[in-house]
Length: 420
Image 1 (tube, rainbow, N blue to C red):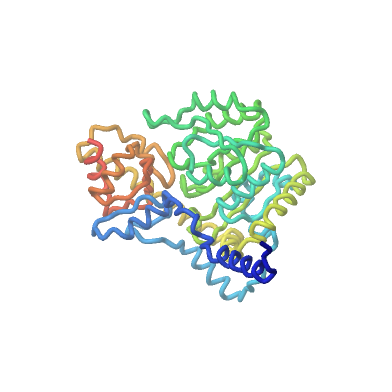
Image 2: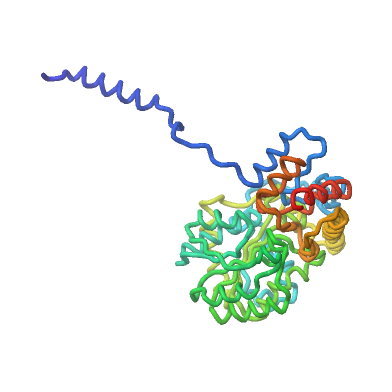
């Protein structure tokens, strides 16, 4: 039987209406909570009076409150008085900030910097710089990247989402709570020529265990011999030891040894600018022309990704690093943060020993930077959370920034309780 044009049109209209009425989001599943942000959400919902959050990597003062560096407050006032505009930045960001960031990391006397062989762009802190560089690697033929095992948890999804296979090399021996340097050397020796290897410039996250300068030299020689591309992630310069040049020593050694390398910098921890997303991404080239070519490609990645970076945070850093007095204030205030962290490491270890723990907690004071890789198992971490309302990541990483003179006894007794 023939169907009239009217009936056919009506049926198509009804079918289209049914299709459009279907919930377009019905098949979208709930994503698992972020292991760190989700931890904070759980902490906020906990009503226990003595609860402690030692999971998030953000500095707190000894009263457990967020800390704004006085030099940052002063820089904010300077910018306020200048009545700066809110125009777009360039794709590569604030050139004054980038220049100062490169000098901060590589050193004022860096040969490739003086020869204009280092090219850089402003980045959305470390995370954004990592993603941009991952995209660049993929665009120019890299299929994989090597990261230490363990590494910062976000390294893996960042590089995976950039289209790279993430491979791991040995870094830490959890049984001895020491750097697994021998196996690290063995793993690097097997990496295919031309591979990119990610290195933590200082204060390795999550372990807090860094190579000695002698070991860094061995790594530099081996990476040069294997013709690998070193990519430094520098998130804690000045915050780790309290001395910015010391924390940049590994990077500067590699540069002096002649490596063509890449560097991503974050100014979240050392300047306390967590919410401003201030960072830089740079490369050391053979000559100025090569550096300029790479920067041009970085800009091609950035433009369709986020167009250009925000301006306020970079202006704050540039204001501080361009002023000798504010720079000295920053050095002193950053050292103050590092010293408090160091003091809490000593206090936590001492309190654990005083509580009667028979475990060896030497690694807490051997490690450096914001985190202590405690060695606690996932079950022990969960027990500490459920029994004592102390929140740290499942791998036992403790943010020492959350340890204060007011809660260190409580934390030590809880750790002793779940590990005895």
